[in-house]
Image 1: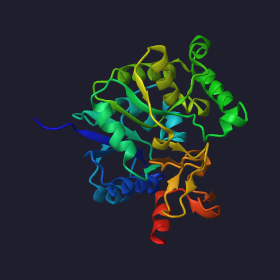
Image 2 (image 1 turned 135 degrees about the vertical axis):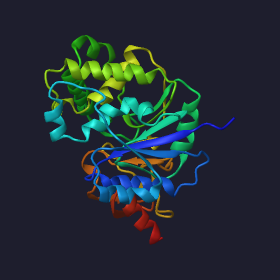
Image 3 (image 1 turned 180 degrees about the vertical axis):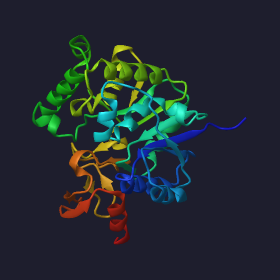
Length: 303
């Protein structure tokens, strides 16, 4: 009898290809204790882009129409990447035969293997979704004002009726950028059902509904008492809420407050994807960095 089979899945189009290649490079350099395949949802890649992905030994699958909804064609023309979101609850259909599935957004990359080594094997034998909340002791916007909570409430109200919003808000938001599930988890079907109902209930999908996929998972979990396991922020570090600190001795990214544990997965959320940033270092200085894997690698080469 063979061992458990694991897969990490992401999605990309030509626009996001540089970030997706960074993710793949970061994964292939790891020496994890758990083996995994890599799957990619093709959002309209050119032949040249597919050729750039070929050396990473990935399985490409073209996204289909998993969920239809009012104004879908018009919205997908504005936001072609949205099909990655409507495909996400159906990863088992795109990549059948695996015991556990780990989703990683195309704007994430792995600094070390801890998140993968923890989440993939644990999820394989558990019904729970392994996922990271959007709140942490280093996410200062949550402590400085109510603005993050106000955004969450605004998103929920734009996508769900008041009775559902009142039932689950203000529970911490789970971020779907990094998560792992067993093939047998009951979360898949309830997530898909909730997401489908959400989109079909809306008169027309637009920018105010951009977060509907993530919100639907949160609603499905809380309204159906589905199992989940809360993972640490180091497994999905949201740069929108807190910039990492750079360890001056190693060049690795760590938490900005003690104990300065090493971050496993960096998530380039919001405007932090490609901007040059001033990062504090552990020796009291600052260094200019772009938070991409490519820039991180260049920094290590100078050590």
